[in-house]
Image 1 (cartoon, rainbow, N blue to C red):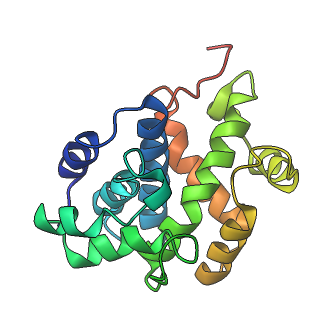
Image 2: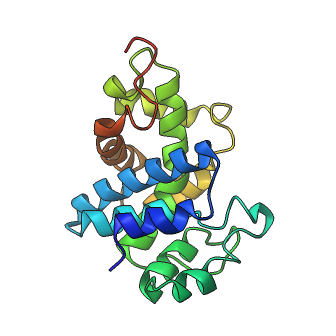
Length: 188
């Protein structure tokens, strides 16, 4: 099973840009929270979340086309590689998210971008971000405009959950790591 340590080793061999590493951490912690919600292995889901954009920095226009072969060769399981590929469903892959892990990754990849942006707007950052504040930002299509809200809604529908419920799980999963994520705000 993929460990967080191994995921960091693999990802960090390809990813050098700080903002991409922060994104990997955001998704990782959100995935850990989703794993807890579904009663799954938190570290395993965090590892998959951390590794999800493995090829993005080097191949942004061919995202996920350079992922499967090197990760399989590095010993990452087919199941985990499939989960990673599924987060690009109908964007850059045809791998449909089927498991709770896959559906969660598909959803939280974009969702964490809005959480991060919303936290950066607050004096206390992520430490006191409430779901109601997140939802106001989510409904404002001009806020964090690059985050695809339709993908988030589609992912939540796949999970059979409301956006606000998934957001709350993710915020709570990311909050203990606010300092590491650079989301403590301007007051702290």
